[in-house]
Image (cartoon, rainbow, N blue to C red):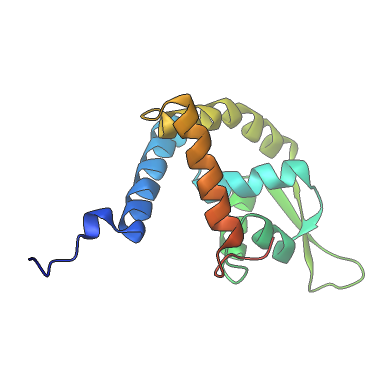
Length: 148
């Protein structure tokens, strides 16, 4: 009998490895745009909900509200989004894509869609659906899930 912990089969290890794979595939397919998965998520969310505030955006993309400002700052420097204080509360920052940012998102979207296919390519169609359903359930119902 072995006292060794089989970390290779541990959920945390497998999820970390899957994340590494996802980020690597994203870099391969979207790297020419010099954008990270979190940056793309922010840009994509702003396409769907322009004028949202930073805190709501952070919740929407499941990113730390305290550090999203630096990511937004990098996107602002690229000229892809603009930040403006809300009139009712100047501390609240509202965000919009610029025309250049919108073009960038539209240019990246096919590559990002390909990333999703490549991540799941080792699985057959039924397994892909099952994997997505299980991941969604894990994220939505885990006590550590961020509010959306």
